[in-house]
Image (cartoon, rainbow, N blue to C red):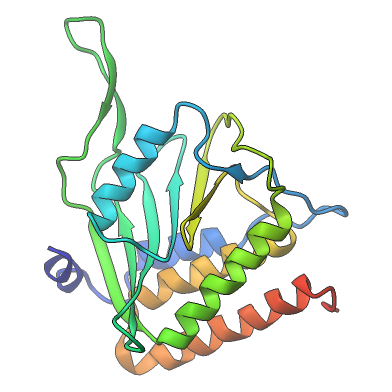
Length: 224
């Protein structure tokens, strides 16, 4: 299913590029950068989030993923699926064909319906194992340093982002400053790469590696 869906899409498509740019350009950081992300799923969101993740990755177990659950519109996700031994990993970007979370006005009074009987739009490419592993380590370090160990994911009115990194989940509203801003820039680079011709991928990986350098410097307290 994945390969067929990926082949059917044109490389360099404008909608995908626009989504990547929207993720990259977030509001400027505040003087004191904090995040409201917490551990686990927010209350009453777990079933919805897990349904979207299953739609996007099936029974696979990504080492890193980000699922975006918007207040309106379709859900999206980015995932890194490990290869065997030192072989390349798989980078996959998914976008629901229709919104998963919807209200069903049935004769019985209505209720929430999770529309998982659909085939999402998906794009995927091979990503060098060393780069993928560095991304996992960097995101885990950023999230562990920014999210207190005792804080649970908060009730969020609006968009919910849920990161899963090396088995640990962090969810909440968008982190729009500091390390979070750099991570969203990296998400945009991953989305672009998922829809990039092979001959141009090396440049995408270089951009991602340089962004990870920035994140590492920031976390070390040496960013200029």
